[in-house]
Every structure is written in structure tokens, then in C-alpha cells.
Image (cartoon, rainbow, N blue to C red; front, top):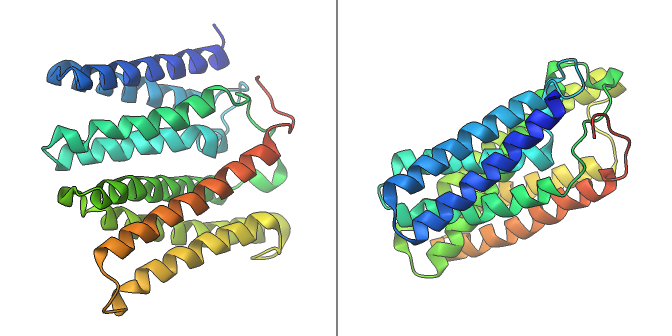
Length: 251
């Protein structure tokens, strides 16, 4: 079995484990739900790590490619909620967005991009790591913001996800600027990709400053978070659609 096929097998096993966990949650099988979820996290992590060896040499940037790294980040954040919240009804419904993004990854080309001179720096991997983790925080924040707007006052903590997402996204902009300077000789390019990143950062920078408006209550922040989800989702998949026909190695 090749590394590529092993990685893909683990990804399918992770998906199956998450599906079983969600079904068992519906039937209120508490311990079986948690066991399947933990198995899913383990398989998912093994799949992501093995992507680094997809082409026979270790390429860390392959482990943090957005289309595959995003569902893992969502599952990781879900695990964090599991450790901090006792109400299972706040935890396992998050498997819905996890599975959505995971299924998208399963139908996407599985290979990795050929190594390039511009990508041979730790800052490229750091950029994608923090950017995708920030996207996951924004998505989780929007998920719980929707729950709050539907009347669940226990999900007011959606605000924390948005703030952490903004912090991670700001770190991504710094590491991305360093990578851009090392790879292309400038800190910023007037390209579609860079302008999209700037738009998302400005959108959530505005969110951070909403607290200075006395009339802007938590319900308006929740609605703003949902608008942010639409913006992030549009830019994420706009980028992936541009990359879908690009040459890849390993599948």
C-alpha cells in the first residue's frame, strides 16, 4: 500500500467514524458517540500527517492544504468544545459542517502540488496553518451564532470563536507577508488572492470594533458572523475552483 492510498483510506475511515458518531448521537448512545468521534479524530489526524509524505518526500505544506485541512481544524475545534462544554447537544451537531467540508474534500483531487522554490520556507506552511485555522474559527463562530439566533442562549460563546479567528487570521497575514517577501520580493501583491485575504481581515476587524457601538447588541453580532461565514465560504471555494485543474502529484 502506498502512502497516498493509506492517507486516503484513513480519510474514508475518519468520514465513516464521524457519520457513525452523528447517527449514534441521534439515538442518544452517549459512550458509543464519543468513541466513534475519537476514532474519527485519530484517523483524520493520521490522514493529514501522511499527506506530508504523499509524494515520497516530506512536504509540510501538503498537510495544511485548505481543502483537506479545514475539516480537520473543525473537528479539532469541536474537540475543544467537547472538553469545555457538558451539554452534548452543543457538541455533536457540529459534525454536520465537519462532514460537509469533509465530503467536499473527498470529491476534490487528492494529489499535492509539486514543490516550488517559493514554497521552500517554513512561513508558507505557517501561513496556511493559521489561515485555515482562522477559517475554521469563523465557521464555528457562525454555526453557534446561528444557534444563538434560534434561541439557544447557551451558545453566546460564538463571539470567542470569532475573536480567536481574527487573531489567527492576523498572524496568517504577517507570516504570509514574510513568505511573499522571501518568495516574490514584496510584502503584498495586488492579486485576487491577496485582496480576498485583505477583505476578510477588514471584515472581521470591523467586527472587533463593533463593541464601541452602544446599539450593537449580541444579536447583531451573531447576524454579522453569519454574513462573515458567507464571505469566507465564497472566497475559500473561489480559490479551490481556480486550483482544481492545476497539475498535482500523487492523484
